[in-house]
Length: 166
Image (cartoon, rainbow, N blue to C red; front, side, top):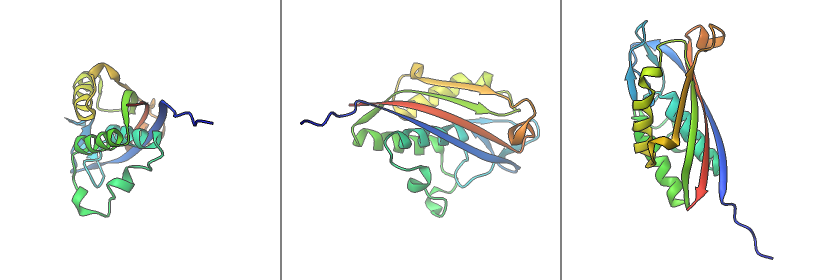
């Protein structure tokens, strides 16, 4: 009996980083200004959106998470541009015989307002993944002043990806 090869895979990813002073606020590869001058804390640039996307992509193929490929203990990745890391994960998927069909994400943050920046985020992410911009969905929402996002202690993101065998 021939084994059927799966043609589609779905993955989901999540990331959250703490808001702190004296750090850049980068989401979706776009440098933003937080009204309180805060940025996201992390070993790389702490871009929660691209981190959630990478985890979704890796998870769809049961390849682990971004910590496996870009460990925080490795100084090589300190301050790394997450769009470059996203490009590396995209290359890994292609090497394994897969491509992104579409990716959809939501960022949860009280401030700053992300809507004016979403188109640029989509363009930057699409370029890093090597897909059309219309295959990248990004939404933004608040937490209505609830939880760590609502108290502006951090920003989080959820992503879902659909992969197709090449």
